[in-house]
Length: 153
Image (tube, rainbow, N blue to C red; front, side, top):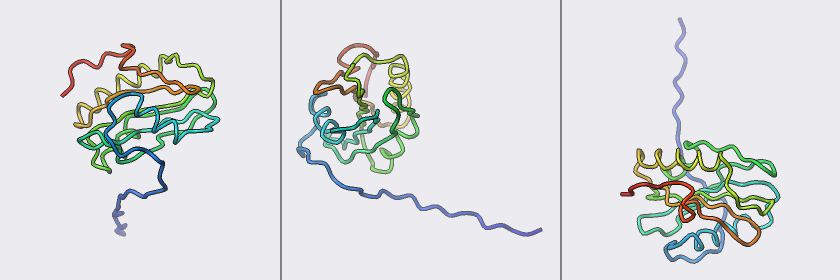
């Protein structure tokens, strides 16, 4: 019987670049939409991005969770929270663009948001909002009342 080696893993963050953004706290959906909008400018497909925030809600990083087609993007909670955990984020804002410019959330968007709220509660990393970006505009699922956030920490 031969013994196989057990893999040893090292997990680390790798900085890929930077996006110009104010170093002040994200105080509104508009603030977050401005950061993500600059990052996704010119995107021709749907991109889902996690905005990682520290305890004072300053942006500590952006992570592209997935890149989809012109009309869909596959997202799982583990892919949203993995970079948040690695970056020691206190909160996350999820955002994705609709290249069509249409801001209406899909049933998938609403279901995903509910799952992320619950996963964030378990992990101690609050989902503050889920934004849909269109042509120069955005929709906050939290502000629209589309999804109930319930009680927060």
